[in-house]
Length: 255
Image (cartoon, rainbow, N blue to C red; front, top):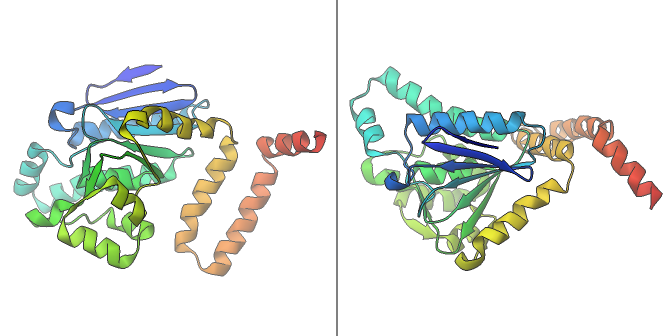
């Protein structure tokens, strides 16, 4: 299945949904249309019973260069209310990614900068080609990567996060991997098959178990140790009652 709203392409193949930022001439820069298109595609993928994982990637050379010129011009002349609405729209996208049942995998080639780096960081997993570049250059224009900071702080150490967002430097995929921003870095020439191999693994495991695990993993951020353990008990019981678990146990016992 394939869909196209011009700014965003959507397709499903072998239980993997692919959402492609489709503004290659603008380095897939973020604007209202693109953000709305990604949200819509994510919701559609989440509703599809057959989908086990979602790839988020960019058309052309770059993953995403951040906000486009028109978006920056809009910010410069906007009222407080307009800026609040605009900022909330991006926040809603980050929350949506976390609240989906299936894993969302950022597949990064080229540059992922500013809001583009934030979008990649907001995904559950990040796979990068060895020539990819990452960075939060917002401070260079007096801006702050404010919303993604809550996610970034949960991904890397406080001191490394401080350095990354206050210096505005671009870093390599290898350094991003070392920091904990990226799960795996693959050679440019073998990137696509290795990405497919990694993502297709989600088609071989229980969808319900992955969904419950994802929800619990992010839920424990706001819980005390005891509360996290108690919530784990609840999820453990729910998992035991699922069809996937019942079938999995039966299959294991037959061995």
